[in-house]
Image 1 (cartoon, rainbow, N blue to C red):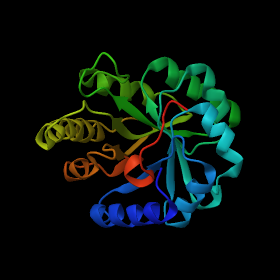
Image 2 (cartoon, one colour):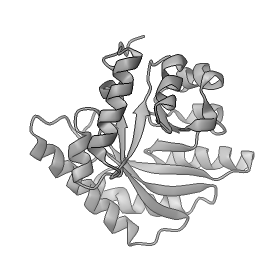
Image 3 (cartoon, helix red, strand yellow):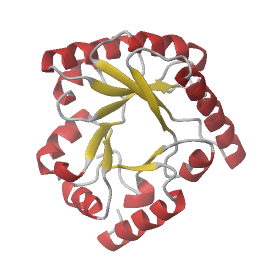
Image 4 (tube, rainbow, N blue to C red):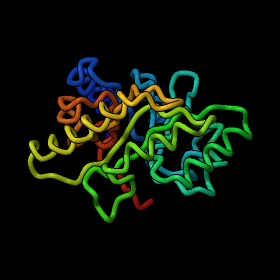
Length: 226
């Protein structure tokens, strides 16, 4: 994991590269609260957590007054209740049963939860997400839930050796995003297209992403098996 100097320099560099075209989310899986708070002090106003248990362990130690927290990982339906009042958005809504549980828990807390619909843009069997051809139907379903606010789409495209192949998937996502935005789905704002991670965030921004989820390019390589 990078030291504080490297983290600070990385945040400054990435923000300069993005140049205001997209919001920078710092993906903080396995990052200790001390370094998370340091990153927040360097201007990170949005962090993303992948694991419910890890988020709960860190939550009281995060400088939450200066940052938003998004949940960006696979979310089990039975764990929604643990994070519904702790995150500002759930980016990884990939099935109706999960959306219904978010609706139920949000109603119980008297809140409206902003969400993104996760699209499996590469139709990969090993990845979660709605099939691209079913994205419009899924978003209309999400729009029927009064305690859920659809804010846009997210995806994790297949690993590509060539930037042009990355862009092909990103551009497909951008087209789906625009098409659904024009459908005026109920309870939706459709202002976020969350694409791009440490290896491809610049390509994603070039293709229309306005939120990038960057972890290792900020914090360095980490042991995800911990």
